[in-house]
Image 1: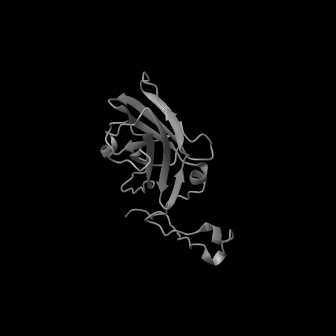
Image 2: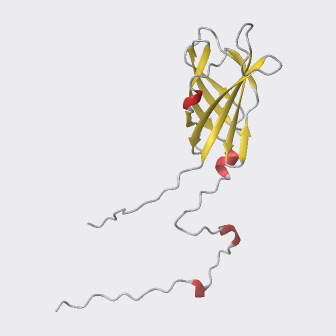
Length: 182
């Protein structure tokens, strides 16, 4: 055939990012005081990991945080750690109705900032987070250079001139047609 065959391929996955959702709510009287601060509020943390910078990238919830029960009335914020960069949403009030079934809430409203969509399902003692979609800030998506290839040396093209000297051009080998078979 006249096609190419891929014999070996290596792909570098996008950097893994960690999302932390923090739910802060008042502790009901008579409830356990474990995890509470001095003001009588508790902070519940749900973590998720994901890769990629596409809009509404699905993140995988940590198995350890699957049992976290989010109160119907609380304040919530999100923080995305991407390498050394950290992006956060404002802490906002979240009110879930007692009769609400599978409901989506969005953190971050401005298109130039981090936005997080969380899906909540009713559970005993509140709600549980079942799904998370993350939209990274455009500044991260646009200014993120592709990772250097592990097979090729990385060159910063911004420091090289566009003109290539003739002496740097690779020499082309002369290819002759095969002779007659004897």
